[in-house]
Length: 231
Image (cartoon, rainbow, N blue to C red; front, side, top):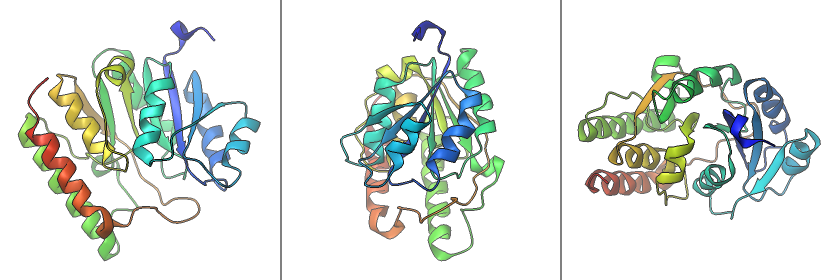
């Protein structure tokens, strides 16, 4: 494959998503030059389904979503690398709006905002209320620290430039990598923006996020990121 012609890589991040991964892969193919599966040591047929659809499969080291994100940035060849979960909660047709600012060299990280695009998963019960409230506090803190006006710092549906992917240094192993990515890009002078993107209920299974168990990790990750000086 001639990597010079790869504008968009879509990395499908998955662990035990055999019920949905095939549909997600098929949905992203029209919107990218390269699609890859980043697998977190699935014990079901996730990898086999991806291979049957003809895309490359890369296994991370099994430390969590953060590990999968780092693997995607390591192996993705596109000028823009898109991260999308394998649970069907995001719409593949939003990929062009995520990647256009990067292809045009107007941004280095583009986040799909659920606050401007809407979400079916940020309200309805106490867990979701805590999740959305915590997300807002974190985003507000990032905005004031770096002088930006983002609305969503936590959505994993996003795109990053190849240059930024090869420059930033990420260490978080769980979902906190999303806020870490934004803060490390900002402190290194990369341009961060967002576009509307709707979040749907996952097509099968249950979310792996248990808010009360990981809340302290989000706070600690935020404080570390806010205290770092510009690179």
